[in-house]
Length: 102
Image 1: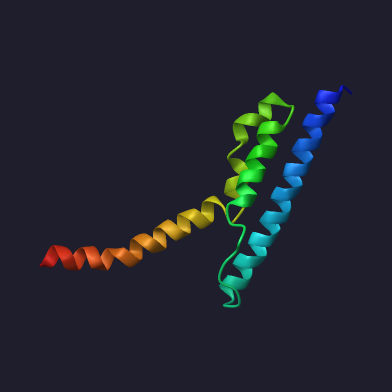
Image 2: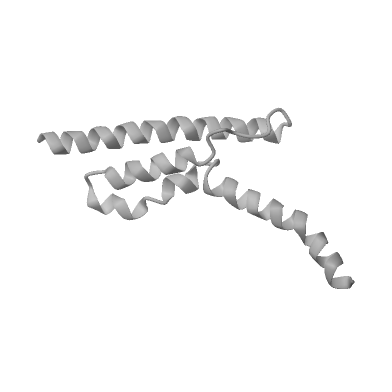
């Protein structure tokens, strides 16, 4: 195996491992938050970012179009952003309705 190919696989494996650890931590945090024990994670978007990097660095070109999938599978990345945006929208909605009634 050539050195650049070995380096590419090593970078993919390292970023994939970071993604896996972040995704597990985010999953644990979401589980505990659903039980009322914990309210947030300090590594929300980090997992999705490293997962995307792992897929983009992969030496197999047919895998690269799926760079968005790790961010979707990590509960702390895209699902968390969607939830935050939805709760922010819902919390601001009554204020908008009141201002329209005036």
